[in-house]
Image 1 (cartoon, rainbow, N blue to C red):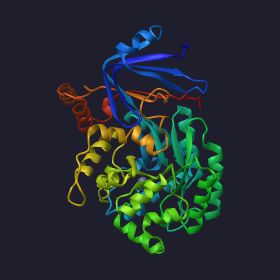
Image 2: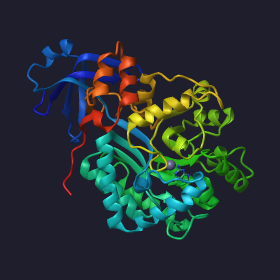
Image 3: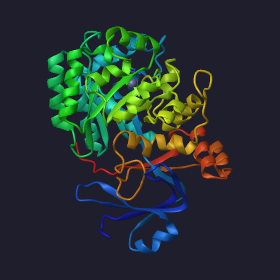
Image 4: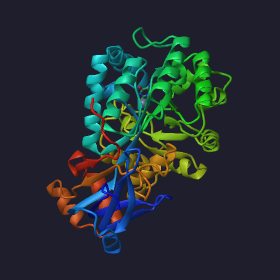
Length: 434
Ligand code: GUN
Ligand code: ZN
């Protein structure tokens, strides 16, 4: 034991590395700070088994509370915080009428810093400790994002949007400069403490071949960066992409041709896929960021969980704010349940609550290439965790008290929960003063 070792006693939710939910009615989470300043899990399990071994360690006791891994949001746009709930006929008019005008303002560093601060506050209130985030095409938005994440000691990934065509003045970038800026931002922010850079072509229709090729070259040169984009969200978008890239087998196939599918490549939506697309995702280790509140709000369609399982396509959950309607992982998990359940356009499944939770924690970490780093509260992982109050509202208190098993407890939290459940968020990184 070192002076930095601490322990927390409460009900304890963890996941095995394979995705099995583990629950202790009386659990102990022991954490300690390593030389890099990051707090990691030393041991976790039943209090009765661990307590004697850690008798000298100071224990914080939260009776009736649940300790759980922090949530990971696999796809979110911090600059779209202010356009949540903007109505539109569908994706393309929504981009033109709300998204691009809002993103234009991020050329202004002060505006970007203001929104970044609000965004991280909102993630924290909702229990999201890691997010893969779009910034805008302006490098100032990336500096605002990473600067704020670094000050708070968070594990965050993000990047400058690449969009050099079919985009209005104010957000459109210039091919060569956009790639120079991306490389400079990789050098500035990637692997700085807990931060990671994501090479971020917005989607194939708004990038020239030259920009996509350059993005793929950077992805090969910096193989542990992330790649982050959108694909097969909306039928009009799919039609447009097929017209622009007629030689590709499918919309997804466009990205393969430019070297943009590999481990740590993450594509939001992946709705209008066939099995060959799903197999391409599996073979390349590419992951889908399923964004159910966004897909329901923009009328995009329903992610096919049966197809993903059958073919073995990696996936996890995402808010996709501001197309998505909530920062709350509880809202996202419930929407994912509705989307999975839908059985008129694809096979309908009743997804287990523990699977939904895994898809937003350890499973999302695995899909992001962060297995063993966050998301499970296994020994050795970073200690980003939540303290949940299952009695946060009268109905939650009544319903969770009736739960006979873990699945019933988790489903009550998913169906009835929101930010009121999240009483505390403990993050593993050392906050650095501004
Ligand atoms: N496709 C291209 N850009 C966007 C975006 O900002 N949001 C969503 N949901 N889809 C997109
Ligand atoms: Zn998106």
